[in-house]
Amino acid sequence: MRRRGKVSSHAHMGGAGGGGGGADSTYIYSHAIRFVIILVIGIHFGSLKVNAAAAAEVSIDMSTAVLLKVDRSGNGDFTKIQDAIDAVPSNNSQVYFILVKPGTYIEKIVVPADKPFITLSGSQATDTIITWSEGGEIFDSATLAVLASDFVGRYLTVQNTFGTTGKAVAVRVSGDKAAFYGCRILSYQDTLLDDAGKHYFNNCYIEGATDFICGNAASLYERCHLHSLSKGSGSVTAQHRVSPSENTGFTFLGCKVTGVGSAFLGRPWGTYSRVIFAQTYMSNVIVPQGWDDWQDQTKHSTVYYGEYKCYGPGADMSKRVRWSHRLSQQEAAPFLTKDMIGGRGWLRPAPKNFKRPSKL
Image 1 (cartoon, rainbow, N blue to C red):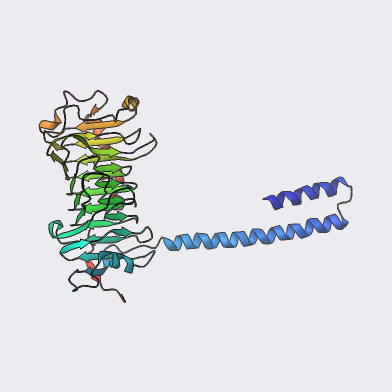
Image 2: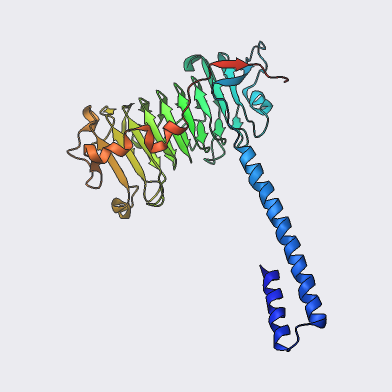
């Protein structure tokens, strides 16, 4: 656009001189030609970018997957899970199904952002265990860090055995459209960093003591078992929504909350923290007030903590904090389906057909 302005400026100056010809006309003409050439080149490369973007959106056959086998005893394609993930090509346009045979895998695993559509699956969570021991920074300590989109975890135990002396994440989920089925996720503080994106957890067991489900994802937990190890007053959730315009929050639907001591349902890591418990059993581990304000009363008017048709000794709302909500059916309705995470558009069944990789 700056070139265009310069041409217009010189044309105006030529006209003001009364002639508009000679050297000025040549200057105007040559610059106009240069502008047209640049414009045409720009349109051409713009078209290439559009075509490249369209090519990137290749339709993926979700019913068929490339099968990779991991067996620590040596009877598979790989003995380490990370090696199987590394074998998936960057920007893959096929579903990869990594079948992990029973065993204990002492690994720190990362699913990088450029490797979507990976399924990591055991046969049952109790005998397929991924374990690591690391504390410290919340984003770096995870045993399993999922940075890619369209990830599925099935029938795995993922644990961080660092202990009770600090932050120690078992699973970090920072990619969009991730789902976990029948998994066990174990640690003590910040067990599950449900960080960012739309996520779904079904029939999972999640255990910890302090803020053990935390982050700023938009997530639906359905028929999950949350078990608090807190002996004081730890918190099950620490949701990190920081703005009313963010469509994030945690919904627990048809879940079960148990524990060994006492615990809050949640406390606000973010000013606009949002957590809903619906049709969930709560044992007496849940303290009567239900929710904690993290010693910041200014958040009473901004957080959104709600309960709908929960039951059990910990679900008595008669002594709940005044700034939490007993939801009506109408108020609860938006949180009770997979629509809240757009799940109908991306949740997928396990593939029916498998093929072996052309080379390893």
